[in-house]
Figure 1 (cartoon, helix red, strand yellow):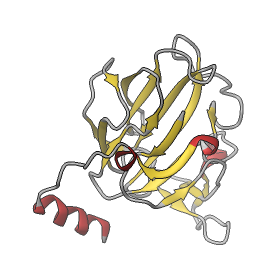
Figure 2 (cartoon, helix red, strand yellow):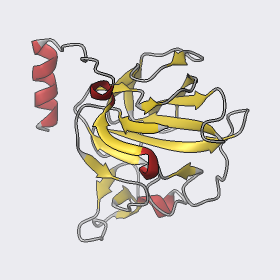
Figure 3 (spheres, helix red, strand yellow):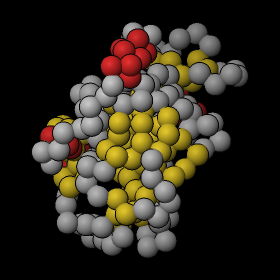
Figure 4 (cartoon, helix red, strand yellow):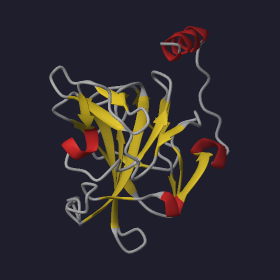
Length: 203
């Protein structure tokens, strides 16, 4: 199994185990980043608040609405399920139908603007899953993705490991865009979408 970059933009802002994020102490929900390992006034450590030892996946900076593709290559079968959390975070979960390297696997792609899959859809490498945004507990438009081990009923395993069951993808990760690996050209964006994305990236 090889895991590639699910978006074209190449800017990894957090890896597994990093601890850069802070959360506002009082509502409304807001995320900020540490400066010199210290949270801004009025914020506290995000991952400790969530009961985590650190970041449990990879964060990739993206532009608003950037297409997100399934980045896992290998001779395995996958299916997708949509999810919406209590903070308004939108995501797609992709599960293996059988064992991958001895275990069932679950991948999560989070903070999406929208998903383009239906629950139960077969997912193949390079398939469009949705579009990046900043939904849920997020400080800016980006994609969070992670990997968990699961059982046959899609329940996450080892949820008390300090990372809510997530495991580091580093041994399998190649920082190359999945569509480049598959020699597929992404659909061209219209000039209006390109202009909107540029303006959104400038703040």
